[in-house]
Structures are given as structure tokens and as C-alpha cells.
Image 1 (cartoon, helix red, strand yellow):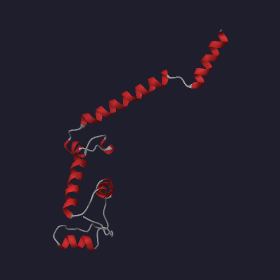
Image 2 (cartoon, rainbow, N blue to C red; image 1 turned 135 degrees about the horizontal axis):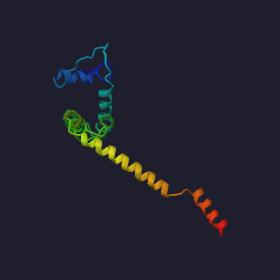
Image 3 (cartoon, rainbow, N blue to C red; image 1 turned 30 degrees about the horizontal axis):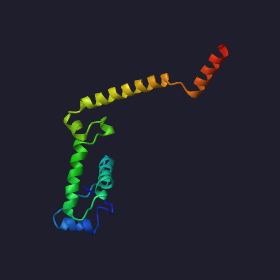
Length: 136
């Protein structure tokens, strides 16, 4: 499904359609929802993966796209899913991940607070030294 953008309607896309390798369906102009999520996915696919590789053939683009989609769904955690991958979210298999992340954040916060409390700042050290010197 495409919109009417120049990246979707051009000679290259038309050739792929004529060769039977691609079929386009023009999206409705008045829709009730946003396609921003899929637009963000395609932007990531292009800029974080495809443009970093040689795209010298349609087979290369297909192979690279298949690899990225598999990795994206099965290996890459997403903040929108609280650290779960799309597959874990879809299949309901990653609930312990969100619990582990929450516990890790709590542990890190407690450790950071403890370290901060046990490490006085330079001003506090100076004041403490001055109090000790004055008492002597």
C-alpha cells in the first residue's frame, strides 16, 4: 500500500510493477488512522540497513530486506514494547523481560543513590576538614 509520494510513483516503481515483481495499491486519501508507524519502520530499514549495503540488484534488496525484517521482529527490543521484541509482544512470550528491566532499573537506581550518598562532594570534604582542623 502506497501513498501518492514521488518515491512511490515513478519509472523505477512502474518497471517493477510491469515486470510483475511488485504490486501497488494506492492508499485512500481520507483515512481514519496514521501510517506513521510503518513510515518510521521503512525509514529505519532504509537508513539503518539498506543504504549501508550494496543495492546492485533486486535480489540483493530482497535478501537484505528479509534479513532486516527477521532481525527487527525477533531480535531488536523496542522501547514502545517495554524492551520486548515485536515477536515477543505479538506472541505474548516476553512478559518476564519487562519485569527484568524494571527490576534492573530499580537496582541501578538504588546503587546510584548509595554511591552518591557515600561519595561526598568537594565542598563537603573541605567543610569536614575545616571542622576537624578547628576542633584540634
